[in-house]
Structures are given as structure tokens and as C-alpha cells.
Length: 313
Ligand SMILES: Cc1cc2nc3c(=O)[nH]c(=O)nc-3n(C[C@H](O)[C@H](O)[C@H](O)COP(=O)(O)O)c2cc1C
Image (cartoon, rainbow, N blue to C red; front, side, top):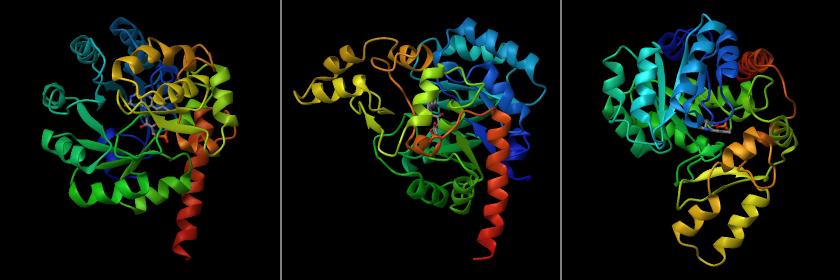
């Protein structure tokens, strides 16, 4: 189905496999690209040389386009960007930072740049910075998110009303029906995160994948707004944050509780109690761990059926 997004990234389906710390290494990215969507390596959890290794392994595992997601809140960004250029990566998705900082630097080197936002205000800033596409991510999404709590259903048409560049919807999309819904609202493509966590190829710990599959509606919450808002599973770590909130903590006290490497312990090493288990609301609709190719096939089959059903309404 050729459209603005498939043409921009030279892919078969207008679907992006989201960059996700501790989940999206070369195995997930290459499997996604081989399945006809855009695979993204999540650089946020990688030291620069680890990223280089993942890029090289991804190049060996697929002939199809793939990209790297760079959350700009982490250190070593210059080093990360230099590696991306040296390794001739053609697509970068930036997030969690100012799109003006890197967009033209990357584009000057021939790289296509998309930027992730969670509000109309930041979508306009990204467009002004000259990005090639915008990912608008709703409140439902897993991982780090905006403070404004705007849901995907409300955000997509509002961003669409204001911007001209290709628009990718994210947050709460795990099925073909949701993909169609956001495209009816104005998106040209979708970015899917949580659904790909529960794939065979994601680098998530198997116990975390099982938590995702077992999750029900209401099992996730957006918290830590004072630091960097994040949607996660309500486990012991989450309950500890809630306890601390009762005494009106300072950001420093919250930072101390968060500590270091919680996300790694939780999602990568499988510490389900003390770890930070980032996942979206749509986990309640994810019931199995499947190969990436099957996930993509199911989404696209459902999308085509839903399109027909809608035309008969
Ligand atoms: C486990 C996890 C880790 C994530 N890490 C990142 C990240 O490193 N960089 C980023 O831009 N977004 C990150 N996100 C957000 C995703 O890129 C994506 O936009 C989001 O998952 C879409 O919503 P969904 O989870 O409802 O599909 C993460 C999401 C999850 C679930």
C-alpha cells in the first residue's frame, strides 16, 4: 500500500517498529524490516560501541531499510550521532529533546529524520526544525511520554490540523483496526511499541514478556511526571513511588528512589518487583508472544478486513 510513509522510508507497509530501550536491538529491528515495516534500533539503552555492534549486525541480517531511535536525554549524543553517520544509517528517529539540535546536522549528511512529540506545540516545533516526518504519541503509549495526557484519539486530528509533514500515530496501536482508525483521523502511518515487546525477537526478558501478555486494562499508569513522565506496570516499584508521593517528595527524593538501571533490571533482566516495566495501556489487548512476521501479517490482514467493513457501514 504505497503512501507518503512507505515512500519516505522505502518500506512495504506504513508501520514503524518503535525504538524501545532494552527491547529493540538488532534482532527485533532486522526482523521488523524483513517483515516489510521499518525496524528501529533503540539507542537509548546502548553505549556508543554497543550501538555500533547492533547496527553492523542489523546490516548483516537485513537488506531492507532500518533506522535508529535516539532519545536525546541521554549522554554521549555526539558520539552516538557520529557512529550513525560512520555506519551509514539512513534513518533516525529523535525523541525526548529539542528537534532543532540535530535535524539539519543529520539531514546534511543525507539522513531522513523523524521526531517524536506528544503535543501540537511540539509538533509545530518539529515541523519548524524541518523534520521529514512527525510521530505524535498519545497518553496511552508505553515508556516516556508527555505531561499533557492527550490521548491518541484526540492528538492525531489536532496535530493533523496544524502540520503539513507526514504524520505517524503512536500510542495504543497494536491491531489493524487501531491502525485504520488513526489513519482515518489523519495519520499516514503508525508506530507500534508495546505489541513488539511481546514478540519472539524483542530483547525483553521472557518474564517481562509474560507480564505484558498477562496485563489487563488498568494495570499500567503514567507516573514520575516531575522527572520524566513514564507509563509502566503497577508493580512493587510503582507502589513505592506512590508511597513516596504521600509525603510530597522533592524531585531529588524521586530521583533517589528511581536510582540507576531500574529499566534494565526490569525489562532486560526480569526483576518484576524492583524493576521499571515500561509498557502501554494496549498491553491489555496483547495475549500472546509471536514472531514479528506474524504480528505484522495479523495487523495487515485485520487492517484490510476492517477497511472493507468500514466501507460497508
Ligand atoms: C518498553 C518501551 C520502551 C520504550 N523506549 C523508548 C525509547 O527508547 N525511545 C523512544 O523514543 N520511545 C520509547 N518508547 C515509546 C515507543 O517508541 C512508542 O512510541 C510507544 O511504545 C507507542 O505506544 P504503544 O506502546 O502503545 O505501542 C518505549 C516504549 C516501550 C513500551
